[in-house]
Image 1: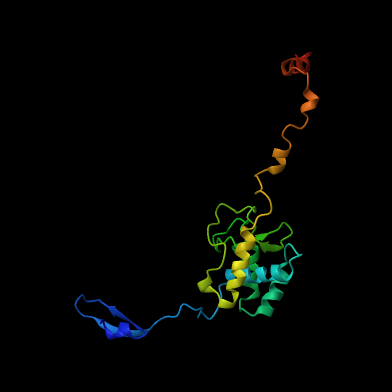
Image 2: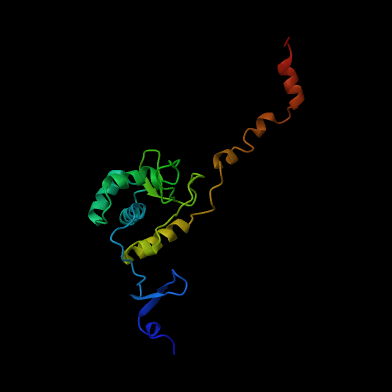
Length: 196
């Protein structure tokens, strides 16, 4: 049959500080739904950039101003300065992380300082090891589909994955015809004639 507290929608917790003496207290069963009063800044940045990508699919990356404007419209609550710092440093996967901030891999900072979601072929700084996506438990439920959309977008690759230094690999064999019929040793000997 069990203890009555387990039969109800309450969970029984006990505290065993003095080994034999127990202090019981009944606590309402916790919901798994999002109940926090705010969203983490890195998570908010990810959500805002993902929303911008969904709303403006033709635009590859976004200025910090566009991100701040969209964040104000969404109203998740982070200060503009915090969002700016996360966009340019704390959550930018390709930037050397400093000791004061996070080491998230959530967005990519372009050379012109525009921000976009990270792509599978993007460089990620080796010192960055924290999350790629917001944890669903840390964000309101209405954004869960957006995070799943971003995951699918990230995992979708167009064509084969890019090779490291692809341009250098493409140079392989170029100029082969220039050296056809030329003995390498004879060529070097000819260059060295007259050296003294």
